[in-house]
Every structure is written in C-alpha cells, then in structure tokens.
Amino acid sequence: MENSKNGYDVVVIGTGMGGSACGALLAKAGLNTLILEKNEKIGGSCSYYEKDGFKVDIGTHMFTRGNRGPFGEVQRRLGIPNRIQFKQVHDLALMKGMGYSIIMPKELYRYPIFYLQLYRELNISLKDFVGVSRFLHDLAMMPDSEIEKWNERSAEEFVYRYIGQNQRLVGYLGALLGLFFVLPFWEASAGEAIWCYKRVIWEQSLSYPQGGAHRIPSVFCEAAEGLGADLRTGSNVTRIRVENGRVQGVEVEGGRFFPARAVVSTTSLRDSVLRLVGEGHFPETYREKVKKIKKSSVAFQVKIALDRKIFEPGALFGARILDKSIDPEKITIDDLKRNYNNIMQGKFPEVTAVYAPVPSNFDPSLAPPGKQLITACSSGPTTDVELEDPPEKWMDEIVDSLDELIPGLKKHIMWVDRFDTKFTANWIGKEFGPAISTGQTVDQVGKNRPSIRTPVRGLYFAGDCAGGGHGVGTELATQSGIECSEIVASDLAQGLID
Ligand SMILES: Cc1cc2nc3c(=O)[nH]c(=O)nc-3n(C[C@H](O)[C@H](O)[C@H](O)COP(=O)(O)OP(=O)(O)OC[C@H]3O[C@@H](n4cnc5c(N)ncnc54)[C@H](O)[C@@H]3O)c2cc1C
Image (cartoon, rainbow, N blue to C red; front, side, top):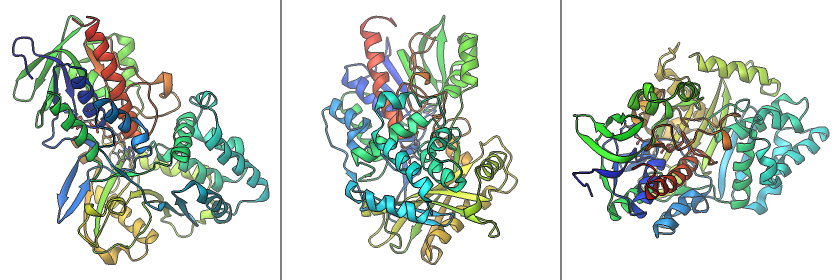
C-alpha cells in the first residue's frame, strides 16, 4: 500500500514474466511494492486477447521446464506450489521441411525411435552416424562444468565438432540449437543451447500452461496483490527520476510521480538507460556497453483460428524453400547465412523458417469445442530496417508456409490475425521488439550477462535483459525476477540504498 509521505519501497516497471515474478517476491519479502504496467492488460509478451471464443497469446510460446524450472520456484517461494498446471501432448512437435519430416516425442523411452527416424530422414551416412550419435549423447550427458566452457563458443562450432562435410546436417542440427533463442546458430551460444536441451531431455517438461501463457504472469500478479502490492495497469512510465546518482522514483504519463527507494525496470537495458533514465546518469563505459548489447531476432506473427482440429502435435518447427528449383539436399550453410542476412536487411526470405506452437492441443479450452488455434512466427528485421516488401507479404508467407507443411490448412481457416514487428515492439515497449532483449549470443550468457545492479543507486534491471540465469526467454526472465528480488530485498535490508 502507498505511503504518501515516503512512497514505496520498490516500484517494478512491467508485468511480463520478469516483472510479475519480481514484484510478487518483493511483496512476499514484506516490501511496500508498486507494479506499473503501461498496457491495460498485464503479461507483456505473455499477454492475450479473446476473439470468437478463442483465447489467443500475444506472443508465440512453448515452455521447456514447466514447474521444474523458475516458474515452479516462484510458486514455491510464494507458498502456492503447482497453482499453474502445465500440459503436455504425446507428440511434442513435428519438425518438417527441407525434405524431412520427424516427430519429436514426449516420452524418453521413444527417443531411440526418434533418433532412428532422424538418421533415416536426414540420410545420415555411416561416417556421420558416429558424429550424430556423439552429438546427441553430449547434448544429454555433458556435465554442467563442461557446458560452461561452451558458453563463449557458437552453436555452429559445437555442431562442426561432430559433423564434418554434410552441410544440410549441420544446418539442421544447428537450427535446432538456435531455435530456443530466436537467434541463428552461428550467433547463439553453444553452452546456453546445451544447457537448455539437456534439461528438455531429462526433465521431460516441454509444455504449455493450462489457461494460456498469460496464466503464469496472472498467477504471479494475483499473488503480489494478495500480499499487499499495488498493481496499476495503463500506467506508462515516462521517466525514472535519478538525482545525484540515486533513484528517486518514477513518473508516469500524465505527470504523476511515485517516489520509491528502489526501482526495478524490466524493459530492455537500452530503453531503461537511454530513454527512461537518460544516459548522462551513467558512466561512459557502462552506457557504451549498453549501446553494444545484441538483441535476438524480432518476429512477424500470425494467429490462425481453424474450424476443426487438423494437426495433432504440440508444435510445428518447419521450413520451406520458396524457389522450387533449389534442391533442399544441396542447401549450404552459406546459403542459410545469406538468407538470414537478407532478412535482416529487409529482403523477403528465400527460405522461411516457421515456429508454430498449437496452444489448443495442450489446452482445448483455448478454442471453442472442436476448433483449433495455431500461433506462428518467423524472423524479421528490426523495426528500424525498411522492408522491401510490405509487412503483409511477410505474414502471408507464414500462412503459405504452414499450408504447405500442414496440407489442407487453408481450407479450414476461420480467420487469421497478423501482428507485424512494430506491433510487438509497441506492446512490449522494447525498442525494435526483440524476442529476447539481451540475446543469448556467445558474449552475453552466464557471467557475461548484464548485471541486475546498476551504477545508479537503487536502480535494478530484471527480465530477459539482465541477470545470470539460463534458459528460454520466459524462464530466463523469471529466473532474473527471482534473482532481482533477492538482491533488492537484501540491499534494502542492509540499508545500502537508504
Ligand atoms: C514471437 C516471440 C516468440 C517467443 N517464443 C518464446 C518461446 O517459445 N519460449 C520462451 O520461453 N520464450 C519465448 N519468447 C521470449 C519471451 O516471450 C520473453 O523473453 C519473455 O517473455 C520476456 O519477459 P520480460 O518480463 O523480460 O519482458 P516482457 O514480457 O516483454 O514484459 C515487459 C513489460 O514491461 C512493460 N513496459 C515496458 N515499458 C514500460 C513502461 N515504460 N512503463 C510501464 N510498463 C512498461 C511492457 O508493457 C511489458 O508488459 C518469445 C518472444 C517472442 C516475441
């Protein structure tokens, strides 16, 4: 509750995974907490809307660790273990395109068949058989101390360690490693990829929450309010006020000022430092570092409502080549790099890679009875890059690719909602709209991630921009929220920011 004289102990900016987790845990620690969200609805990237009986994610999500990872940890700390139910499906994903079609199973006991399918579909020679087997073995078995040594090397280097000449195979295995980070595999950290896949294999928790992705931040925000935190939606923070190197509080649109001893910002580091605080309040070395931070790719998204269930697996990881004269078996890594670089320069892709979770397969209540909801996305350039073709063409291409990969799809479409990259950037409030604002590149994981504490006393960063955690975006952001709540509570208790 607001103390009008001295303000709040902490103001948290944002109700995505990072902000909602951090805000709830700060309230649990007994701190007088205010959580501010610029949108009318909470959830950030994991927010939602409703249409014709469908409950649709704003983002495009799957969750790798269910309650075994940071989501479970937050609930345990809040005293509400397993309030969020994670749902699984028998076939986790269909990986299809470039001449292959492979089902990724849920159960560990089906992995030998999955591996056999992989060897057959990818035409793996006897020579590569040994390499691929060692690759799969190491993904599952590498000790964490060994994984750390791969943090600063790329997923591409990791794959080349096992596979010599077969470019298609390198491309395929590499794409799998980069997928979780919305990064091409020549930029993604191998250590981070191995860390995630090892947990996917052993924890068997690749899943989706009952009630939709927003169920996670909703449970955290409800808990925060139950513990006495104030939550205000429709409150756009326009300035984090800093005087003499110390945070004073935040100003929201309309001019109201909320004094606070500490402020946690969960928008990107760039937005917080350059826009909300002002770079003059930071030492030069720090602001130069912030300007050089690499973000993940941004995404065009489509939401597709179908009049019946036509696709069984939990997700589709697919690719299609537009130019039918190109032989998928002869695609090289240079071709893939050229295609990606063209996309980043705003040129329409020759190869479209599509990531398409099917939320209603995990939780049928997200669509009206008998209907199906597919959410899908593909990489696009940052919003400052001029597109050679209108955004509608890019989003139509996702639908066309899905129609090729899921035959008959178009015949069953009730409606398609298209979200371009500018929409996402505006919704999450992060410049350029990156899927993960501090991308998990070779130089930005583990000990090299930006720290939660900042040079400004009382100012902290959480979410997918900062903190020493690991994992896919939502889990990385939640872990950061946990870490940040511990640091802020401890600094306040020790009087470090009074
Ligand atoms: C297309 C796409 C696909 C993805 N796929 C996956 C996936 O499959 N699995 C996965 O785990 N992750 C995935 N991610 C990444 C994941 O969504 C994010 O990494 C994670 O949700 C980020 O959480 P966050 O708390 O850091 O930030 P966000 O969820 O972005 O929340 C930031 C919040 O801060 C608010 N805010 C910003 N500025 C202000 C301001 N000035 N005043 C008030 N409020 C403000 C925003 O409105 C927003 O609510 C995907 C992301 C995208 C975009």
